[in-house]
Image (cartoon, rainbow, N blue to C red):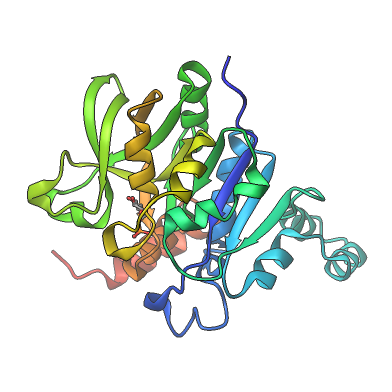
Length: 292
Ligand code: G1P
């Protein structure tokens, strides 16, 4: 029986230059998609997969993220005095249990693999999840819950995959496929950001991982890869040789909130799912859409 996955790592240290000036004083993952910060979508997805402890890898703006996931007595007292149950529930929904959130500081932007390595003392010797909050994934069941379920059956490492256009392989980690059964893929390797002609498939890693703690030793010994950064993909590629390594094709909706266009699409899609916003937003969008 594989060990349960109880901890999640959320790298949030990026500079987010594509979101300036908004990202100057506010970490990009704190920007709202409708009325919930991007980071809380990932935390909620992790909670739905049974994750109990969260390790945030932060750079600038750590305090804002801490505040968001902590109880705020002043706000609670204010809402209680007004008997505003709805707002109270929304504020309480963001709060993580005492001790459930830990923060690892990434001093220098040396890559995703380096960010994960910074969490080694906090994660310890057990399998753990990684969620990249830029990828907003809407799935039923939620994406990480699917990975945790597969991990429960197969052990080893499990990643989420989605097909991308050939021309876009240079933006992603791309899987090398050994076998496929239903939506479960067995990986024999992977490459970080290959040019389309060199890509081993069109199946991209989309920012959800369940990893064995052996990844830390690999990352610690690893030379910089694509872009001069310590790449998580390179460590995982090596791990395909010594433990089961599976991918799960994600079938839900995916939004790349690392780009302003993807962030706007996520905002519109999430707003359309809200009954109280849907009709007005639809009429507005129909009104401004050019007629065919
Ligand atoms: C990171 C990973 C890459 C993955 C991507 C998903 O890249 O390195 O393997 O496919 O996230 O969004 P980044 O977008 O940080 O360059």
